[in-house]
Image 1 (cartoon, rainbow, N blue to C red):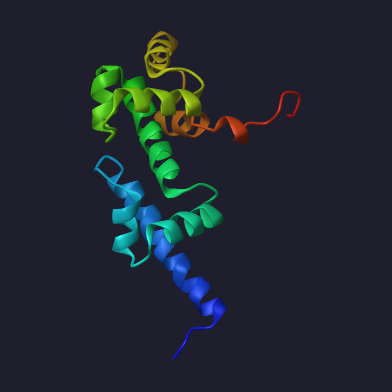
Image 2: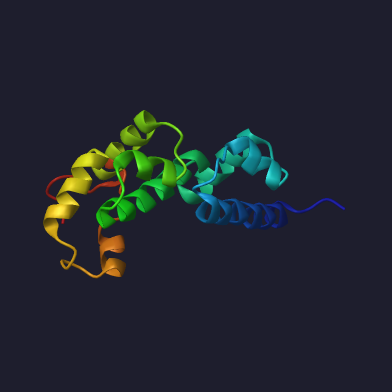
Length: 147
């Protein structure tokens, strides 16, 4: 019996949430779109399109955002080098990690670490810091003058 379009859409949403949850849980492990798609029985192209339609960004970009969020927390802690943080969050290339970090945060990870160290640990509780300092892609930032 064939599924209706509505039923198929709901089924796809369940699968897409599984992929997103897997990325959230396993962000530090080697993950690629092909493996994520195979895990839910979709092609990589279909997963990428549907994931982007549903969550606003493709799965690889979502993965990199999760890695950068975790990296920000580790860099604020201050006891690991940028290279150690890069590999701790699952990135396999320091150059790619630095590029993505800079895109999302607006400064390279080394500078972020230095600023976090000079700002002091007592400025905000960690739960507030995580929310306030969440990385935002440049295209998502409000244009100058918007408040």
